[in-house]
Image (tube, rainbow, N blue to C red; front, top):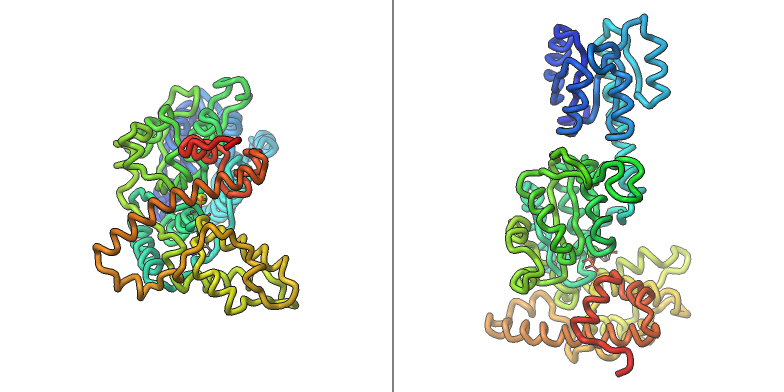
Amino acid sequence: MKKNSRILIVDDDETLCYLLKEELLSEGYTVDVVYDGKYAIDSIKNKNFDLLLLDLQMQEVTGEEVLNFIKSYAPNLQVIILTAKSEMRVAIECIKKGAYDFISKPYDFDDLLLTINRALEHKDLLVKNTILSSKVDQKVSSKIIGEGKQIQHTINLALRAAKSDSNILLEGETGTGKELFAEFIHRNSERCDKPFVIVNCASLPDQLIESELFGHEKGAFTDAKAPKQGLVEIADGGTLFLDEIGEMSLTLQPKLLRFLENGEYRRVGGVVTLKSNVRVIGATNKNLIEESEKKNFRRDLLFRLNVITLTIPPLRDRGDDILLLANHFLALKSSVRDPKRLSKAAEDTLMRYKFPGNVRELQHIIERAIIFAEGNIINPEELNLPAAYFSSSPSKTDHNYSTFTEEEDDQEEQQAIKSLDDMEMLHIKKALDFNNWNRENTARILGISQKTLYSKILKYNLKQYE
Ligand SMILES: Nc1ncnc2c1ncn2[C@@H]1O[C@H](COP(=O)(O)OP(=O)(O)OP(=O)(O)O)[C@@H](O)[C@H]1O
Ligand SMILES: [Mg+2]
């Protein structure tokens, strides 16, 4: 049985409703009851259900009409028809229209329970499919690799955060593993058997993000030919990962704020207020406090989001984990028949490199080196690292790191922050020049969205002919 699944019973036979409700409650389901199709439609508009037990003959609005409404309004909602023997023909019609199954009255409770469970499993598959085919990126989960003190500390915090139900803000430079951590938190939370949905706030125009998130009604805008469920509705009970949340427009921010405050939202063009229960994890490589001071990000939204903030450390501060990760990617990407390994000199080179693109960059470096290495050993030249991003000493190990005094730490950090900006600027300029200022190619190679690239060009005031 799926924990906490929500069932709506729609039948004008009050005794049957009462008995059925009691039986289903004792099985652990959450159950609502209405006595006419008219009220069923109201309930579906106001609350998310997983399954409907639907009578056919009712006074005002029939079961068939409710089914028609569901198929366009909430297509993942499963319907089991409760039917008298005499209504068999209509019941079969309903199956053709998309009801999951029918059960004849008087029902056998064990049979009904079996059908309910199968229908709920079917719904899970549909939800997964809807998420996969939506315009947002979804990825398969992978393991967080890292044995250093810092990353282990972050993993521990993430595990503790996972057990709470608070919203979480993940901060970290590009490629540090924010998305990986978001998924890790979801998998370790009570919500793990519900959907994990990713929406990248920088990848779509405003109106599309709003309708992806909250859905839309038919006719809400030119292309809205049919009503559509939003991802918050589909992810109900699960986790919503809002990537690059710092890029969310000021028009959309109040709508998200309202949703975070009480779970309420409206479909685009809709008049009914809906409710959904999802945990939101936001990720950003911006400093949102600074952004809120510059009035680019609402302060109240920031406070709703950063109930728990996790900062993922940059790769250059993770010491030996650089080699651990490099070997992990080597094992993952090189063929079993032709395994490759790093020479000592290549290891030393990696330990001195500053990885402005963090783990994602390391992953690409290794993939490229596997292709270009002629023998089984990867040498420093085959890593092909730009000279601008080297430090004279190897990356700090976690041990070295803890021997710094606090003051030294602060100074180091300050210098690192300044030089990082410079490094980022140089790297972006180089990538743009290399691609003849083609922003699409440049953004792809840098592994960032075009919108982010555009904001960096503005930030560093980069010009093509300089
Ligand atoms: N600790 C880790 N162990 C294994 N793989 C990792 C680790 N950290 C990151 N990766 C991998 O590196 C890549 C980049 O990670 P991810 O997409 O989570 O970064 P991000 O912080 O969300 O980046 P961006 O800010 O650019 O969106 C992914 O392929 C991810 O699987
Ligand atoms: Mg990301």
